[in-house]
Length: 123
Image (cartoon, rainbow, N blue to C red; front, side, top):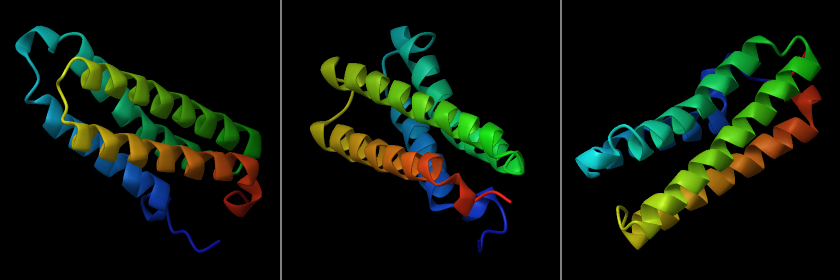
């Protein structure tokens, strides 16, 4: 397997870095978004690496592991929708938007690969 822990997973590293980027970017958003869009996108983006970590600890049970990865995929998709809102509301430059969407698409592909082949990660 070759993984010491969830922090070794590239998908975790990418999801964690994406959540940090979103946190920094949302500091620049208007104050009226503080309790709506900012909270929503920060929550969903942080949920992706958190669920990867939780799933990793449950990998002894393949169905539970896959279930957590499916949760991750859902949170990543939710984050993409919030990014769409950010873009359409003019809170993100086109470049930032494309970078983040591309990153979440990559995360999604990695999660789906893990969902389709959990035996590579479970024991």
